[in-house]
Image (cartoon, rainbow, N blue to C red):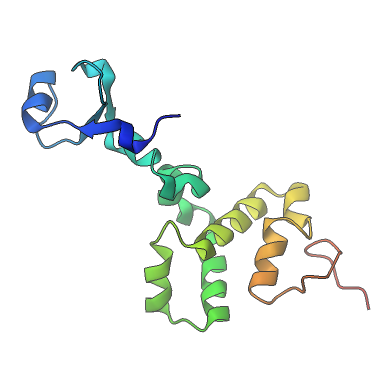
Length: 148
């Protein structure tokens, strides 16, 4: 698997020679010949970054608010930590934040449904424990009524 350090940014003169706009961001693997087929876009280059690895790539990080329950989970997480709206917005823009990753995984499990969403040890169950809406030692499925 390639890493970001394997690539270098093209200069405006190189971009112009290949037919790209001089203001575009394109990258080429170090050692490859200068040809259009060897270049990659900025988005591809960003996906190679380790900070987006837990998300499954930058494209999923950018589209995280398309999942209806993600914002709700992030807000509940912020409430449980005692953060106001401004403070959690700063946190929500950091792709390396473990709270965001946990909320994203819980929201994806809820979106997919099925056994992963109901598993007490799954991402949604772990997230509910994290925000104190569920106890860690509960073994019944998420969404079921606790036994009395």
